[in-house]
Amino acid sequence: MEAIAKAHTNIALIKYWGKRDESLFLPMNSSLSITLDQFYTTTAVQFCSCLNQDLFILNGNLADDAETTKISKFLDRIRELKGEKIYAIVNSNNEVPTAAGFASSASGYAALAAAATKSIGLDLDKKELSRIARQGSGSACRSIYGGYVEWEMGEKTDGSDSYAKPVMDGQEWDLSILSVLVGSKQKKVLSREGMKRTVETSPFYPGWLDTVEKDLNLAKQAIQQRDFDLLGNVVEANALKMHATTLGANPPFMYWQSGTIEVMEHVQELREAGIPAYFTIDAGPNVKVICQQKDEAAVRQALLNVKAVQDVYLCHSGPGVTYLPVSAVDN
Ligand code: ADP
Ligand code: DP6
Ligand code: CO
Image 1 (cartoon, helix red, strand yellow):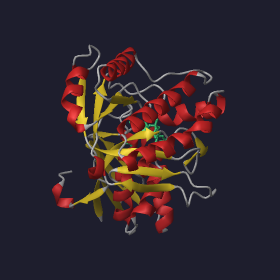
Image 2 (tube, rainbow, N blue to C red):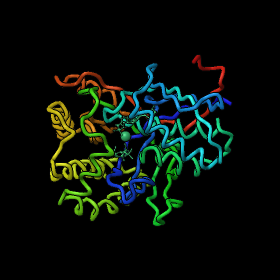
Image 3 (cartoon, rainbow, N blue to C red):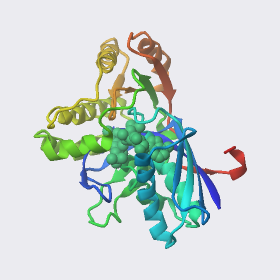
Image 4 (spheres, rainbow, N blue to C red):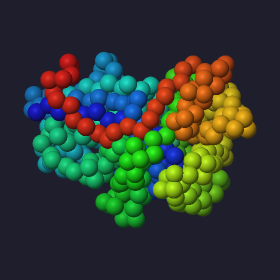
């Protein structure tokens, strides 16, 4: 049976950075995100006994061996769960730049987890889907839900208690997130490799672990109290701390480009001018600016005036993963 799922990306307010178990994708710390309405992946999966290997088509192109192997390893977990050795055609389209720090791996694996489990005949609830999506890309476990979402790191070694939970509906505090494009080229250091190198070699990594739980608690408190300045300050500081750990890695690396810094400076200037806006940056050069809806037009215009800025996408909170009727998508 064919199944089609749509999942949105999410932006981490408190970052997931580092794994304690690479094979099961168990994180070193809990994290918090908002699912975004503007960026998403649609993935169609069809398992068929007529196939003798998996096929992966991404944005209309047959993927290379390395990408197909990644998908196959993920599908192996689903095959194992179902107890059937049967292969699939995966046809996925990203309405988001791929591997550029816009979280394509989050929407990509959330959509794949949902479509593949349904297609093979498993009927999983969202908690189970979140645990599966996590094993394709950690951040994907949060994209199963809409709004504000926490990924609880869990304690167990088998990963059974490491999955995402909804914290608050996005409509209850509908902030504006401006995704600022300064470069859409694929990053040189993928998130997976970057966090591994940081955990293994950066002397700053223990400093990250020392404070991330406190940051998370403050961010959750700010959301409950709708305290925008409290949220903005902790979100911005948490992102800077994450990026600082990469500078201490061996060999060192940095996701920022000159345009990234220009945008960061501009956001700080906006604040000095009395407009509350804060930035965060995932593993890539692009910046996400968070502000309140009343300020979104002014912040957007200010960002468009920055020389390095190629585009600004205005996002709000988006929904969790959904299934689309098979006839609705022409593939
Ligand atoms: P990003 O910032 O886009 O999440 P990552 O380095 O985390 O970047 O992950 C990029 C990788 O995610 C890609 O190289 C690819 O392996 C995987 N990916 C991206 N989109 C999809 C998709 N639609 N389906 C499956 N995997 C995807
Ligand atoms: C900086 O989930 O992309 O965006 O689990 O190895 O696939 P893998 O990595 P990924 O890492 C995301 C890192 C981050 C922070 C975050 O989204 O929490
Ligand atoms: Co990613």
